[in-house]
Image 1: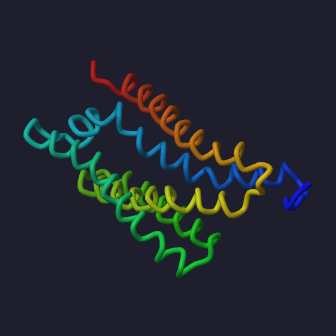
Image 2 (image 1 turned 135 degrees about the vertical axis):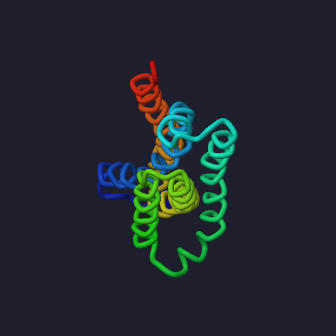
Length: 173
């Protein structure tokens, strides 16, 4: 048997991994959510003219990445301030706040919401692998650590499917 310590329940670790990886799903979802409906948002929902809609589109896309960079660089501070579990809860709250701000019918609010959601994406990209690496026993590590990548890609796929449906149903005729 070697030095490996047995674990009580594989199901417990699978469920724990699925719960933790929802942060990775949030990461993937936010990466892909604007691919299809961005043109609709800029020209039809917010009514931006040709001179402003390109600026809006580039800012809406890039502010998520800027927020993610801020979140990644701030993860150490977050983890030193809170426990691992509370850090996940704080990250989820930041993500909910950021996504909620995006629903305000204003392009500036939308961009600010993307920045705040990006901070949560950055936190998730650093916290999720750390927690999974610490909590999963060696015997399940190879299988369950791949769930992080699967959830990121699943978030991208689902957000593109939703965005494509949105773009088709909301497209002007």
